[in-house]
Picture (cartoon, rainbow, N blue to C red):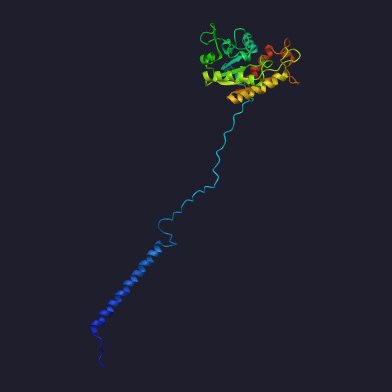
Length: 277
């Protein structure tokens, strides 16, 4: 029986089929190549970027380290010498005045009224016998605040309180003392203020109302005021005490609280060896 297939038509169909198969194969190869180049496990090309973890809102923040507090009480140091002592100005009572009259300090470094003493409760109205460095032979009468504004000392050592412990309670004592410090700070902000302790006394010799119990209590108040105002506390008291905690009797054989030259020299030595650094 003769075949019903037309030779040319059959050839065209076979050629088309081959073309379709080849195109399909090429597409499959292309897709496979793309997958191999970009799919999982491919090590070439750009590295995969790992997203940064989002901080949890529940995570505790990193604490900020607290600054180390500066001790209020001045500690022992190597002797800072005469150069340090020459940079100090002293505001105080009769013992401070005697340091000048005994030539241990020049009057230009001593702030005491003309009468030679200063009580804590008189500080708001007291007039200091102020000796300017440029005209040391021509003292002026100035308030404590005016002295601070005129001199602007690098360091001011305050030695007050012995004349107040018999008359002032804790609140009054602290208020008067703090007012002195603030008046200096307002008029000479760069001045470093050193609050020196009240010196011990000989209980058997001092006037009525003054004793070591009162001195010790007042020294605690002075250190607390120093801490509150940014000043420093100088515990010179410990350099002058005997075994019982009072003043060595030989340091004040006449009235129990005014000091001998030897004792005043010990005070200045203590100040130099407990320098503000």
